[in-house]
Image (cartoon, rainbow, N blue to C red; front, side, top):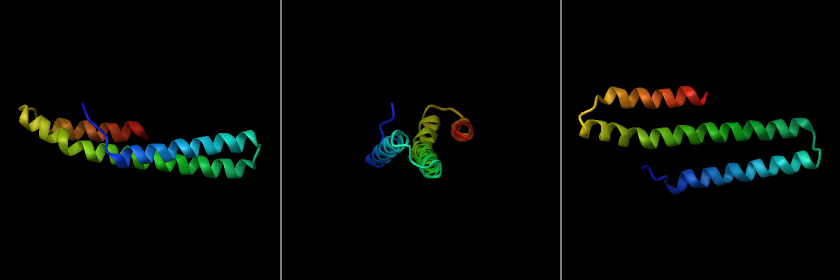
Length: 87
């Protein structure tokens, strides 16, 4: 089981705060351009978080695959598939 470092947790907490901020903006009926701008920022933050998680896990996945006698190409392909799926 993978444990996530403080950086990942902090990023997700910031995203949570951004989402709460957008919910408040919607409740206050703020201009749609402001809401969309904030939603775009959230999407970018989520994308960067996905990349960070995949990058941090890739090395350990390759190491684990190598130690268990599996083909490391499979671990690399799985990481690529995660990135593609996230889009």
